[in-house]
Length: 212
Image 1 (cartoon, rainbow, N blue to C red):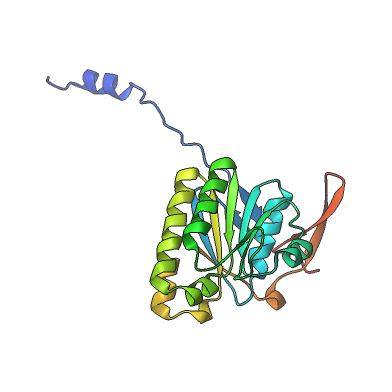
Image 2 (cartoon, rainbow, N blue to C red):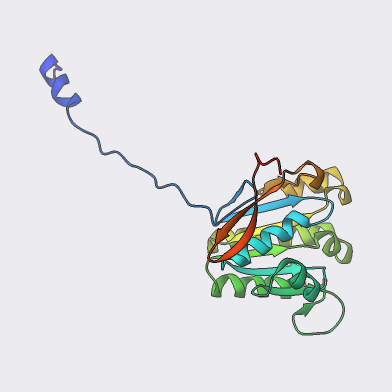
């Protein structure tokens, strides 16, 4: 076909369909962080303060939370208002919802069941250092990779807390691989709070521009 100016004008006038991709909404927004479904996050901090605040905020927003922690469940529930969260305690003590840290297959089974039955859901894992100490690094990194793949399939969220100073540089790099890293800001550097009224209750929300 010989292209003439008329042909070129005719072709140029044909409107091609425009594909607009809808931007995914975050499952949770807190402290300037956007937590998206199908993603894994690694919160690096000496003590899991921001990690538990994520957990508390998700629970307040009626997101189904499974918390796996080294901390005593009742203390964490009281300190962070986690009455609605499902909590598993990593301990060698025998009890309901207590799992030995060496039973990683049982922990994984509980995670699979929770993610399957609840949507949206957040899997919160605290105590990775303890898991490594009670097992070995290679086993735990394999466990984390399995859970990360699971949340992608289930469109859930994985949030892991870790103290980066407890791992060798190579080990930390392997844990970080495939995760969105969140580095906690020391409390003395964080700004103050603002008060907002929501559903008849006062809630404290941080504002990056606040000087309070």
